[in-house]
Image (tube, rainbow, N blue to C red; front, side, top):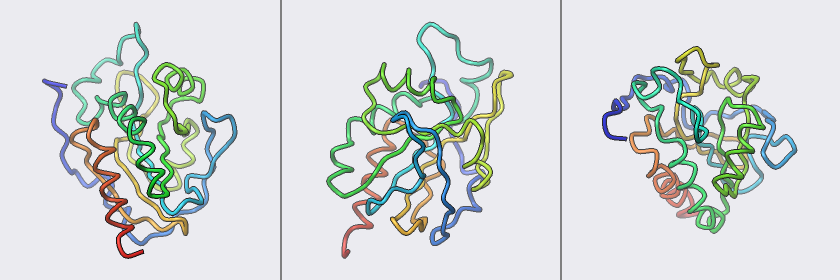
Length: 184
């Protein structure tokens, strides 16, 4: 969005390195059952996003001044639009935020999201991976935007941070997965 601050690599995700193995973490999903953050497919792309807005409700005070906060709906919809391409390369997509499951379900229905959104409202994933948070406008802490790519053995292959253009993030993640699949 024009006028929102640019994201910069401030090192917030430096502790997550390619090659590390992540623990099993199950989170409530918009599908109705808890899902592990790493799927049995060849790859799992998890895009971490702060929060999606609700039509008619104001954004938290200070939201548009927060680098990397704006763009969650555009990012989510870009993954929706590319889901068949991710499936073609045996990749599962999850969106993760600290919003509650009911909030995520409302958004998924409204925007026709065709992949699971996982709720980390209890900070299980935040705590397990030491994910950085935004605090703004008296709201609950929100995950800072990033994208993580894992293989089926729980090995982290890539951390995409910062995400300067949320609407283009799905295309960048797809290209990263396709690069991983060359030679497999």
